[in-house]
Image (tube, rainbow, N blue to C red; front, side, top):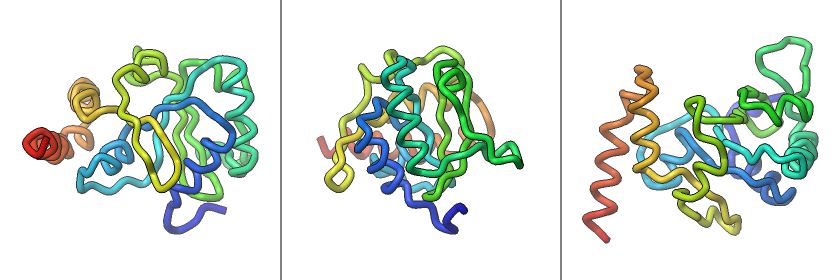
Length: 163
């Protein structure tokens, strides 16, 4: 059962404990870098190697993850996670979106190079930079993405101003 208030830190702890290679993207990436927004889910792009997918599947088992688009509670398999597609999941700690690629072209390997390494409590995680987040949200052009762009830009300007 999904918690009424998501616990993204719990999801991150499980992923880190299982040594899953991933980059946080979307709203949580913005929040972790000081953007004053809220989000209902944790979006990550994971490395689509067989070894990483095996670790990811173990983490998903710990999180009791299953598809939120299917009433039968289907769980993703290795073939799903090795593909470029998206897996929209419900976990025991909140909503988790696993993205094989971002905007149909950015794989983990493309995103990790410009990702920010951030300490979240005692967990080291990689987060999409605000610059890249702005570029991707602009490219997506969805109303919900365009609505947060001014906040992301302002936060980026403030971070640059403060050094």
